[in-house]
Figure (tube, rainbow, N blue to C red):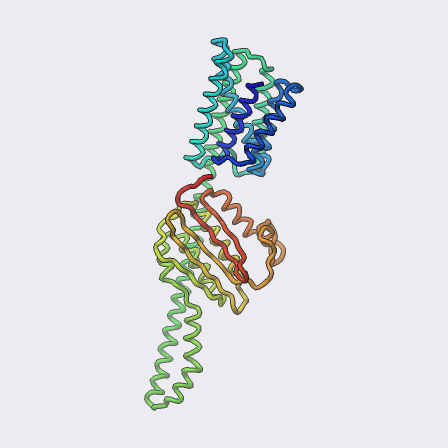
Length: 419
């Protein structure tokens, strides 16, 4: 029974390592205590088959953090197989020296080394214990379950050296294959990402050039109008018609001056954005908002040279945030979008806020896929934004409604900070 308790304890610790959870919460202590009690209660009935119960408890424990059954099964199977490697190594040494005490010592040492290895890999790399593709996760979970059942049933819980050795080889081969498949999966994802990044970059560059051309044409028109205004003013001055000049100014020049001031946003600050894709997204979206007669403001005090997150994900996230702000403001006389980038010591903060002109539902409702205040077949923006933030560990999204203002604050941490 002591061995079962020891194995169960190490399984939960390894689960914490794979989940990259360093802090101990009340739930963790309570769950382990309850699990040990349940295992003790059913041990007399299940005997050595209590291992199945332990695996089930590990799945439940992982599900508490991941909220996904296929991912939870994969995590439970992975830690179980890693633990079984330590168990088989300790069993082989125990059979060789015929000492049960030596087994407990070796098992504890191997499990401790395993925990250190898992924590090191998870904290120093971006490797995850599962895939982003749900179909692939379900297939992997099923295969791992089959391998686990085969090893358990083939041993028959008899400590025969040849069976233990052969199953150890199977476990090591399976772990090796999983690492190879995961590596190929990452390479495939990386290739798709590079292609998508290039496509997005081309779209952004095209949009950027179109906006530059539009502003250039607007400048040419303004210069032409400005020349005509100077000619008309000159005629009033030549004839000393100051009353006519004043009337002309109030009727023709003052509205143009007010419109120029109202539509102005800080192009000088945008020039401080050195990341081309980010600048392209901001420039194109803010320019479009301006063309829709939305008052737009942008603020950045120091150059944004680089970012420490997936650039494509950040582009898409900012695009969604700005699109939502534009959609909420367009058509309203008081529509206004405030945007800014704050470069702090350990993070870069992207802030976007817009006026609210209607009663909004709860924020959790807005993040549901397919839900929109604008009608059917819309509302994928905030849901997609949440998925992007969830898959980037150094991204934090804060969404608030403060009176008549909808505020979104996207923080990109420069140094990964794990709990």
